[in-house]
Amino acid sequence: MSDSPTAAPHSSPPDLLITGCTVLVHDDQERIGFERDAAIVVRDGLVESVTSAPEAAGLAAVERIDARGQVALPGLVNCHTHAPMVALRGLAEDLPTEEWFNDVVWPVESNLTEKDVELGARLACAEMIRAGVTCFADHYFSMDTVAAVVAECGIRAHLGEAYFSSQGPQGRAKSLEFALRHRGTADGRITTALAPHAPYTVTDADLAATAELALEHCLPVHIHAAENRDQTDTSLSRHGITPVEVLDRTGLLATDLLIAHGTGIIDRDLPVLERASGRTAVATAPRGYLKFAWPDTTPIRALRALGIPVGLATDGAASNNSLDVWESMALTSLIQKSAEGDPRWLTSRQALHHATLQSARAVGLGDSIGSLAPGRRADIILVDLTGPHTQPVHDLAATLVHSARSADVRTTVVDGRVLMRDRELLTLDVPAVVRELEDRLPALVDRSHGCRIQEYDT
Image 1 (spheres, rainbow, N blue to C red):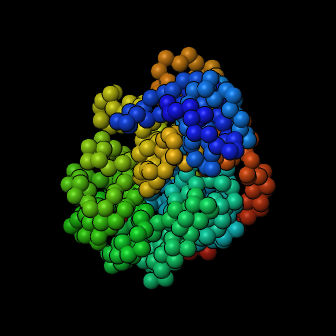
Image 2 (image 1 turned 120 degrees about the horizontal axis):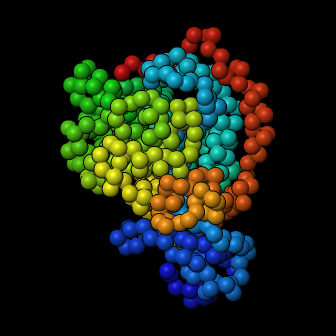
Image 3 (image 1 turned 120 degrees about the vertical axis):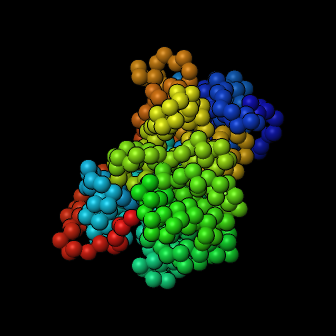
């Protein structure tokens, strides 16, 4: 634990004091541990100290939370999603990937208005805050609207305006303009990225231009690539190289790059990724891979051997039906055991590492979030383990990963601001959002026009 908060006196009390909890901590080797009967002192949006509850007992604070029976974790990060797509949850079910895109999703997305995006983003942020997600990486359209929702509701976000080459040069220009204009906004809670959709919808020339812009403006890039094995096989058949090799050829592996999914990464891609000169990360969203019956999953073990962080994600609720990163954490552990044929991989502690520090690194925020330590942003969730499904506790890490659920999150704090307390959302009005969204659904889901924003052909 850090020194007692009384060791560095201040003229004013801290903004928030959380007492009586067990705190998930990382040691200097990044191993997961737990400090029991602890307290967290928050000042000016930062964790000032993690100390013992007895030492903090007499400390005054503007706001106090008694967290006995609860575990404090760094807020979860949803490393790849399309938040406004919650408006399409359950619309395109039991379909192969190509039909899902071409017959339903891309025709419906041609109807999207800024208001639809706003309502979807509000509903998504509410869902994520209630599930303990304090930061999400979004890759979608009308991102000015999403940024406004983020600024208002208090969550943290890494946002990119998606584009296809079919939009012409203005698509890439709009993505750059958004990234530059919103970088560091919402009191620093918004970071931005360039967001080309994928190598199969963005030309090599546009990908190369994106890489140049990213390096020129010190911007990261967020892209779908090698999403599944079919995409890799099609790329090899048509072009003689894999999607990962396309990223290398176009210079994107020299940027700070977040690759969504990567279940199509194959052995020949690994040395390419290993020699990448930029910071490369991968986001894995296992629930969607199961729904689409993809034969492979993200090769986390191979990527970790290269030092590539793999963050947890949900993808959009149109494919995944959920923005529950807690579920992604459990599924990642279970699916990796099955895929590797090894029950010793991925352990509960390893899963918690992916859910915390690795997810923070994946979105370029590894120096500010992902752990509860002095100087880190105060993005904190409190998880109630008093329910019958989480008792008794023999192994706290295993209880958190395999027994606890997102509904056990009682309180969510971002930058020291309480966004949900005792399951009550404080910054979003869900019933009002749902009522307005329901009125707009008939126009949104209409496909009689026969149009689509893009064609999926891999």
